Amino acid sequence: MLSHPDDSTTLIHIPQPKRYLLLPIEEEQPEVLLRLRDDSLKMPYMDVRLAVTRVDYYVPLELPAGRAAEVEVVGLSKEALCWQRLSLSDSLPEQPADSYRAPDHFAPCYGWMNDPNGLIYHEGKYHLYYQYNPYGAKWGNMHWGHATTTDFLHWQEHQPALRRDTLGHIFSGSAICDTLGVAGFGKGALLAFYTAHQFVGEKQWQAQCLAYSTDGGQSYTKYQGNPILTAADGVQDFRDPKVFWYTPRRSWYMIVSADKEMRFYRSADLKHWDYVSAFGEGYGARPNQFECPDFFELRDPHTGRSRWVMIVNINPGGAFGGSATEYFVGDFDGERFVPDSTPEVTRWLDFGKDHYAFVTFSGLRDRVLGLPWVSNWQYADVTPFRTTRGAMGFPRELFLFTSGGRSYVGARPARELLERRGQAQDLKRADATRDSLLLSDQLAPLGDRYELVLRLAPQPGVQRCGLMLSNAKGDRLPVYLDLERGRVVMDRTQSGLVDFGLKAKSHERESGDWRKDEALNYHNDFALATWAPLSLVSGPNYELRLFLDRSIAELFVADGRIAMTNLVFPRAPYSTLQLFSEGGETKILEATLYPRK
Ligand code: FRU
Image (cartoon, rainbow, N blue to C red):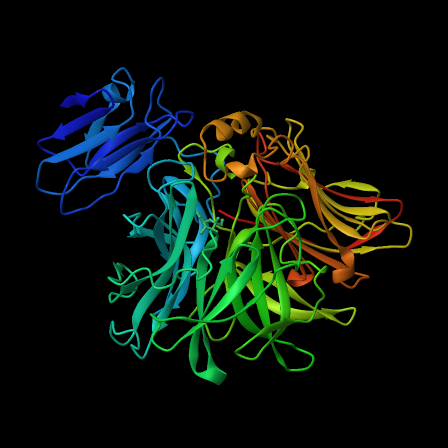
């Protein structure tokens, strides 16, 4: 039952609710305000793109059980199609799955996802919280979604752990286990640190907040005394707190991004934080905006010495445009971080275009393991998905290595991925040294999910060698060594759909999104080749490991000395695999395919 108390407000009266009210969404429409009018829920307005002329998909609004509900919508015309298409349901909306959804990677079952948040290993489970919009597949209404796994291939999705509230959006952050209970929420409570974000007039207000869980990370209660940390100098970009334990001082530290630097704070009780120092202004790629910091130790395998690594996710400023992850290796004495490198040096954790907001798990002792969000802010909002946008990359274990006397951080696929995979198929043939070798004749169809391992030994004279994935529609994804230019390359220029972003550009400008400064040149930002310097690996043999999961291509060279993550949208699965060598012979030492089912 609908009523219109005034020109811009509509009330939806639901005397006998089911579990969900299914909201029809049309992505091209501007956001209108929607909330449940229920005193006990205190739900603030959510921004929802309700359908006006057509329905793209439905999102569920959970209704309180056992009582009548009233939903208020502000800003939508009485003529909008939405009013005819509302329905009640006890189950989630049934709608066709996105054809580009990558089944082996985590993505929520509907809605929008960006950064991984609050990564923590606790009581045998890996918890992934994430930037989540449950009310549409575009950015907005930031919640912390929640999923758990034990093997990184099978995920269980749970209720959102933190919901947008009157302090604002729940932006990115971290989680720790307060084993000693110093924060006062009991021994072993899990604490989540996040940023509350809202606009006050024209200005952005961002402050750090705390929530605690006494049920092992399933549900969180926001701390009454929030926010726990605001920026003393009023800097507007102040977000994404990562909390870590620093043994020499027996203290908790927090690292927070503050515009173009990272700031360290220290605390004894995890609620009161004192400023320690800052690092980063003028360092690394520019122009930039620092976001999503991480800070941890890695052992140098040569010296046995422990080094500190600072992860700095930047947007814009990425090597191939838009967002990307850089890092600094150095020393930390509890007061200052001093990097090994000079300001103009930039080191990338991943050389693809779709690797962002990478952060690591707390609660792990034997390895440093993290997850990236597989997208790029240049076009994240318009990738060819319908009901779910955004996926996490495969987990990567970080390690230090030395090249040319300098320290680098490598990222290799987590061991779980190599333990659980299909039956190996040996693709190697005795005569595998011709200029171009077509392997698909002897293969069962490649499918759209597999891991491919190649060990190549290019002989003198070889200019380029590698693999080419292709399909009958003419889409091609070459991944190869360019020995002339000293690069490893993944070229998605003709990989399938590449110009989906054009339409979004004008729309994004109109919508007055908080990212409007970045009125980005979406067109062709997607159609490009990404590359990494081969100087990071030592020949003469090269190991390439490529995971392809429908729309996510993750390449690891030399066991992770180089990582490269890219989205691809082939119009049909890449069913043909060719190996090629130009200018001379390449010996194939290994060519193995592990299909995934
Ligand atoms: C990074 C980021 C964070 C912020 C979040 C908002 O992708 O911009 O800095 O907390 O996304 O969703």
